Amino acid sequence: MAEKQKQVGETRAADVLHRMRLDIINCELKPGEKLRFEPLRARYNVSFSTLREALSRLAAESLVVAEGQRGFIVAPVSIADLNDLTDTRVLIEIEMLRRSMQQGDDDWEADILAAFHRMDKMQKRLGREYYLSEEWGAVHSAFHAALVAACLSPTLIEMRHKLFERAHRYRRMSSQFRKKWRKKDVEHKMIVDATLARDEKLALQLIERHIRETSENVIANAGHLFDQGAPDPGASMGQEAAE
Amino acid sequence: MAEKQKQVGETRAADVLHRMRLDIINCELKPGEKLRFEPLRARYNVSFSTLREALSRLAAESLVVAEGQRGFIVAPVSIADLNDLTDTRVLIEIEMLRRSMQQGDDDWEADILAAFHRMDKMQKRLGREYYLSEEWGAVHSAFHAALVAACLSPTLIEMRHKLFERAHRYRRMSSQFRKKWRKKDVEHKMIVDATLARDEKLALQLIERHIRETSENVIANAGHLFDQGAPDPGASMGQEAAE
DNA sequence: ATATTTGATTTTTTCGAAAATTTACGTAGG
DNA sequence: CCTACGTAAATTTTCGAAAAAATCAAATAT
Image (cartoon, rainbow over all chains, first blue to last red):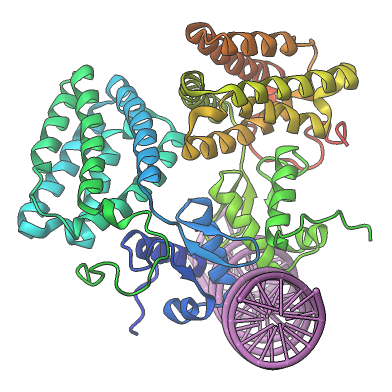
């Protein structure tokens, strides 16, 4: 079987949803691109209805947009959208981190250290271009989730996760153009230390700066790709660099 | 045709989604209830796939929950969930109102007054049991949306809207048991005044209290209905009171 | 030249039958 | 009496053909 192993217990629809989300985040399906049914059906090996179900859910997550009875397109990117996203993330993440620092227990602390360690080791192992790899995305995501996991709010956790994924698409776009090596590992370490020391003021300040600087970096590296009218399929970006 | 007029330009799926959302919010589909396909198919006059698409989207909005390959149930209610929801709403709404007060222009102010007027007039026209009517829900929702519409963040607006609907279900549950007449109209008026006067401190304080008191009221009136094991279809609440 | 109609073509949307999966039930064995 | 197992029934999930709607292009009218 050439098929990638489907998670047991998951429906086919959930599996396609999952794969499509990744493809959008990784810009294999490009921002603004029209999502036609026949091609997608072939790509994911599913029926119309199943595909439609996935598309419709992605629309609820703002990763695609549904256009009346004219099908779906991948959600476009824009500097305005990224800024909006960033501000919202700062609001949510700060609140979650604050609550976590107030309520977090030993397990929470342990999980943070574990997640950081995994991320750190992987970064060193992958070397110079760690941020292009698929698996690093997951580990990095897990680290940031661990930081705020003790906030005791399923609603905030869910929201944060969706915002994080939307933002991840922007990071992904810019990473292919990155020039200078950003010392994220140091930043991450400082955040861990401040958080575990329960230094609220410092930790919140660091996390906000971390989020905002990443966003500014994205605009500096890839901002020129956004907002440019028609998607011009094919020539717009180094699309295979991550494959 | 006995069919309710479908919004033009909308797909059938979007229409069912819309109707189902209302039915869940109004507790015609009760919290925790199993959502079987055959009955729903008859109720909404759609095919399996179309139904599934709607269900799947509602799952993304946390109004239903999908259980592996075992179908869907209406999202259960609980005091913990309501508290979580309330705290999150306070966080979001305060930020949105603050921004709106800083950035709102004349149109924003005019829209608030218009929305308030519509709500106020309808309340007086409907009299004692205004809160049981379908249309009041919409007008009340529009009023609160208008208050924070100038925050210039599509992301926050979208999030707030979903949270508001989740909360509306709780309000709806409790309204059928309400004893004492709450003077919401006075509260709303005070919020409008403080907001238009750009009295940040007061307006934010009022909106927070408004949200929290409503929530406490819900718990006082209907809290006894939550968290009670099996949904026991049929006998649990005065289900036809609103029809 | 520009706008409008018409009809063929493409694309999306909906449908219900068929396949897969879970649940319910009855029987046998401990 | 309870548990384990297997079969039947109920329910969910998937599929692709058929219907509906939008798009495109040529022809005609303004």
